[in-house]
Length: 551
Ligand code: AMP
Image (cartoon, rainbow, N blue to C red):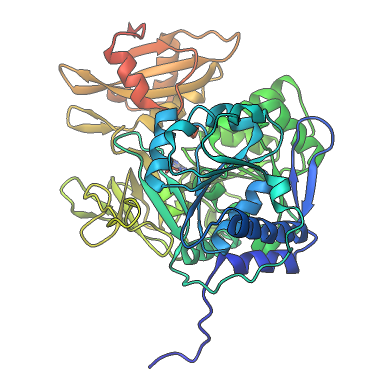
């Protein structure tokens, strides 16, 4: 029997028109560095989105599932592109501006992007790539920057504002199949070629509703969200779509991502919520220590992308900024888990431990743990295995070029279609995920696993340590042993013996897991999305480029 319900496709255009009409007075505020920030209401964004769609179709000839790329910071124009491109039926392709040039070229060619919308400030990055991007016919430039850099470009160059000026502020958005491609994002892939994840209208719609649930980010039109997580990284964790559903004001930092400007925008624009990876918050914390600011408006901070160090969570708690830890991947849209402690522990000492886990799976995400031989492991909080997930906003394959079959590599997808996350962890009987490592970062010592993350967190709790990364290095006797690389805080001093003793204190770390190899580094190398790049550390060690002390 079929249901008697209406079958209205879940489309990005519906999120847009809802936000522009029902929450027309909510605002997107973009930081400009100097002078007043740029302010635009959702109603204005709605009108400009329609104008952009007209310009893309009528002036640039974008049609069908053409890919339109963005090389942009978080700002109002990027929000307009987010809505215009998928709503008209084309595919938004967000480019990660921190990727090495060769990877960007590979990705644009693989997606066969026809148009690139770029911020003027990023033209020094785009201009030298353009000769290698034969599919790109048009470049649309928005915001300040030197246009002469594009003087020799094969592509036609347009000004964003000129292009949309005078176009109608409404658009007859097509009634698309909700399963069609809306946007794509390539994984930052530390091994092999980058892999394209293609989100559908339906997956984005459902994911946005989940982001908005009280158990997830739970924001309303009384909130302002400082969206630091880049729009080029997993759709800024779905926030631009989710906020248009509920009227949450967006505060966009544009290119001003340094701790100083971030502290300044928090003090002056008074966001109530913010989202970013831990490294951004470590920087802000250091800044606030040196130069205290009024950050009391900010009461909710969503942290994900890599594990939130306990020391960071407590420091933020002390400042009145309550951290909510979440886990996800490009392949999971990204919301996979979120750490809201269960009601019965709220206010009790156990609450903190729950908040430090990666959290619980929201409705819509199913999970299982797979052991080394592929066997299912119990949710007992002890058995560690690879996490596999499935659900309506989880990738089931990767993009394989125009007209090509999709890719389903066996190391990424199980035979029955679940995503193999490559993350290793445990799940407690009450459903809380604790990640202990990336499958490739776990240290295998004498047949036992040592969690690099656990050692890092314990080290980063020492007052002299700014950052610490632990990697596996080959060892004749044990197979692998941990190498601790430590960044000391400015002016701080601590010798390795002291740090090792600190780890051993109160049984924080089992004795056999304590690292015997130590080194000080100036900074932990980071990937294009701000995560510890352990591959680089392992390579430096192998090349003998690190000054190792053996205890
Ligand atoms: P990406 O696709 O670049 O967003 O990277 C996804 C990966 O980041 C995951 O597979 C995890 O390894 C890592 N990750 C994301 N969030 C967390 C978290 N809260 N704790 C630990 N690792 C995380």
